[in-house]
Length: 376
Image (cartoon, rainbow, N blue to C red; front, side, top):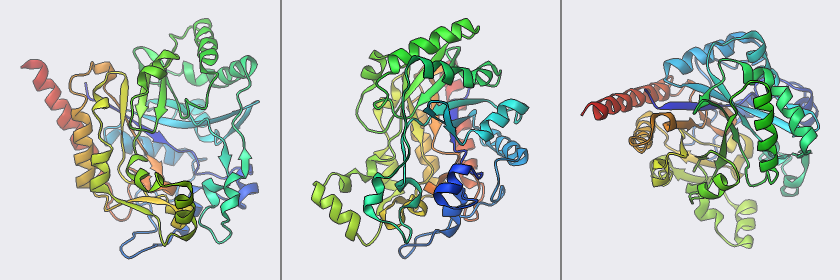
């Protein structure tokens, strides 16, 4: 059995009324991607998609092509970001709902709830109109509405939960939560969803807490009802600069000549962790990172990301899984298509499919090693 690589999938590549209102008619993720500019010598921008082009996720053809390519790269499933803000408010839901409605692509999937408030800074930082104070402008707030809202949330996704393509871990539906610390009502939420699953003939949920820091909160998350933790350490390499005093951070934010830069070769060392060897910790592999299309000089980026270094990163991560039970050999890829964060596996004009091919090669190597280990 290959390690299962689940790729986070961003549905931001189609116009919505809300984005039209906030950012202008026709805004999508491609808007910031296409207008990005290099900020220093050797900074490669913009990153332009190759094989799949500037696709529109309202159409089935790119969704099918993405799945075919992901399968070829060895990815086991897409983990679609899902946005439910409470009170029946949801955004960017059309592509995934079409996947469920049409039955295409025939490719496994699961969901990750992006349970966080959307602020102006997410899309407008770094533009000519950027003002530091606008960071606190709330576009849509994440709210937790209690029992009635949790029932509505479940029912909204019930068709997806019944879909045979929905990925399971330990025979339960994997459901990840982006901000477990901000979701204080999780125990009630879990109980309601567990009861509703049983009432609807489902085996229940395998809840995964998304964690961004390199210290072990797994036991805490498990104590409040999570089954596993997805440890995603892409912020860790940048924390030296962020650890300054408040005044130092403000000076950096206003007067820094450029973004926060970390060599990818150094970053992949800092993103490794022995915690990945725990059966209830699912690591994250990250091919690249460059947030400047969204944040300009306020952004953060990994420099000199190459397929060869990505292969080293994947190899080291998968080797951490050697002694885990097969069912717990789960890895998250961040991400399949976060183009605005320079964080994607889809082909671009610079490297083509080389990153995806590197992933496929390392998954096969890991599987062969596993077969050897079992038979030795």
